[in-house]
Length: 104
Image (cartoon, rainbow, N blue to C red; front, side):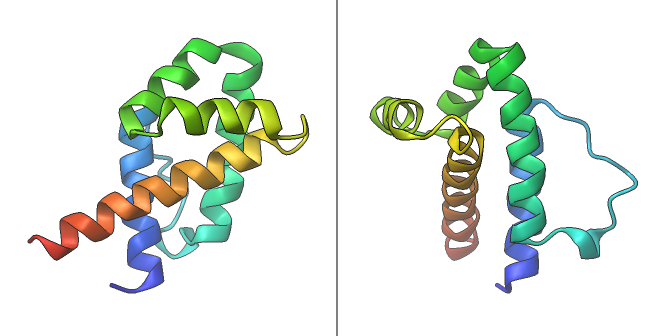
C-alpha cells in the first residue's frame, strides 16, 4: 500500500471516529500525511478548547490507551499538545488500515 492510499484511508477512519463530514473541496490528491497532520491538529485544537469530552471519547473509539492519552496531555507543551495528539491518532489509524489490508 502506498503512502497516499494509507493517508487517504486513515483520513476516512478519522472522519468516522470524530463524527466529521468529508469536505468535498478537498481533492483526493491533497490527502497526504503532512496535510492530514495539519488538518487533524486544527480539529484536535478546537476540541481541546471547546469540547474536551468529545475529544476523549474519540480517542477512546480510536483505541488510544488511557495511559498514552494521559502522557500526551501531561508531557506536551501547550502549543504542541494538539499536534502530538494528532500524530498519535494518525499513527493508530494507520496501524488499523495496515492490519485490515493484511487480513483482506
